[in-house]
Image 1 (cartoon, one colour):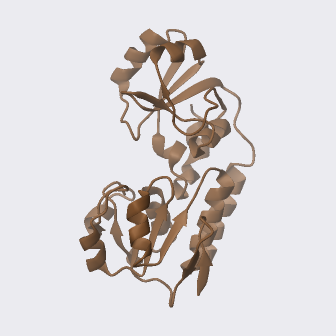
Image 2 (cartoon, one colour; image 1 turned 90 degrees about the horizontal axis):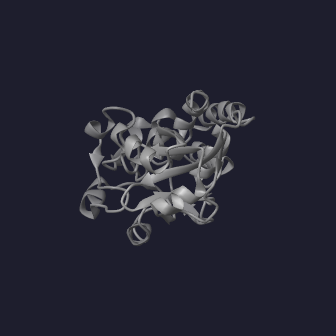
Image 3 (cartoon, rainbow, N blue to C red; image 1 turned 90 degrees about the vertical axis):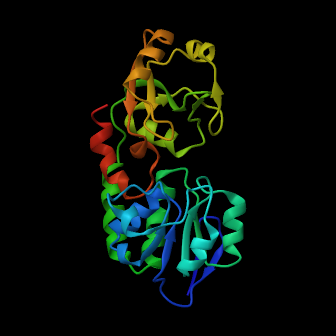
Length: 252
């Protein structure tokens, strides 16, 4: 069986995979929601959903650093990763030894393509189509416009989500006009934040765990802005967690 991943690489599988390692938390959750939990043998320490999965599976490291000896002991017949979230040299090493399917996601369509591809490859096409159909319905129309915004992913230094990110697409769906039009995740100073004068400052729960205490810190910098703690999983997880996005974003 031959499949193509989102890096346009050809993946050859002699049989349907039965021993899967997932190196991406959002895709791990998707595999479970596709009904494939019993075929997952390895996950990362950040694969926190569903609750209890990490205790039931073998942890093979993080999303950037992998325990190669543990991976080898699991004898995977498929490893699933992501271009942005996983560390390139480690992935390239694994590609020499195992079938590795990589996602590359910037838009909702990329996400739907990923869900569809995994469904076909892993014999879960019906469930994948159900998820896709629900997401197409949920995302058919953006929510009401709320105002300009800057989305913080890190504190020291301040790092924000730029235009060429999945987070940017989710901000648009949620009704926020992202003021950061540079690529990827640029750094900003307090002075630059003040100059941007966003109506909303969104403090993400991940990768930096912003808390209530940080709201007051940033309110002193941007006294006129509405500062909100937001669920980073909703804005950056591109698997089945998106099924929760419409209801959540409508409350912001």
